[in-house]
Length: 175
Image (tube, rainbow, N blue to C red; front, side, top):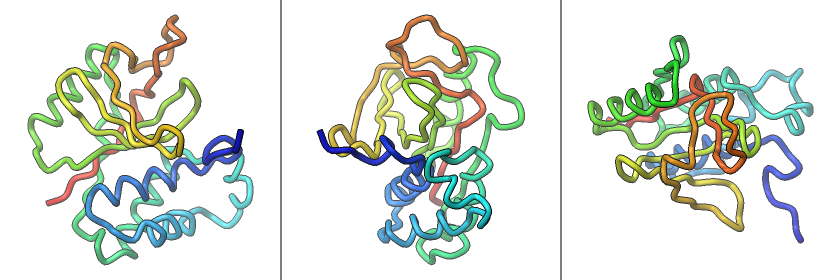
């Protein structure tokens, strides 16, 4: 079986940013991807290829893309749970819904997963119970998941649930 992005490299962060910016109206995904990669310190290359990117890296990449890409000037990034993440899965989803209910300009989000793998993935809210994920896997680029199959937190005994890192939510808004 052929390999796909993410299977051998840790570049899901720049790919997630390119995919998210495209959902927000930036058409040149190649330029977005390149700007995101250029934002990382030279000392991180080539280690980033197999180690991946951190939340701090994604913030740096988003800033660079907004500064360099003319179409991205109107995109605003917010990190609502970075400093004070919700304390439980239930609190996470209540705060998550409140963010979306209070701001109709949210285009999409980037979420940090810890299971099934450490991964950055683009998502949007389909309804109060479903989340649509856009991923870099060419075999399954889109997935709709019920919230019951997601858990915001570091521990859940059900190996079939995707684990979301509570503090790693990036909201992208277009005014």
